[in-house]
Length: 199
Image (cartoon, rainbow, N blue to C red):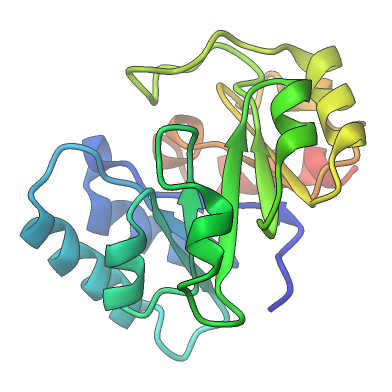
């Protein structure tokens, strides 16, 4: 399964997980990650399954954040793991052959150590309010070096918005993730951001 270039959509429970997914689908995204931190397992299962059904028949890759069990139960296309989650290479041994695994990285050393994944997340590039436990921003220059050091396609993440996306468009990444700035605004705002990325 080919990873899409450009924008990578992530839901945010602050805006409503289902509402986030609906908006991302309306915007025409090709990949959606269900990210939820503060709900029960049952609620997360119900939301993930609903989003999976919402994209049925559409050309959209569905990723679940952190939870390998949930991703497998709802038959998602993959999972995105962080440094506090299960080891990527251990997960690779128990998932289906074409299952996508993403990995968050926050330094050049972590990028070089990445293995068994299909793509990496690089960041946070800028200061972000999306995650309560976010790492210190790595900055544009370090992000560029991280992408150059990676054996895997990379998506840039962390505080990316319409005002600063021009600062990262020359980084040779697979794409970028913007959560709050996209979900807080309309389709034209989103399209303007993508246009700058592609310019």
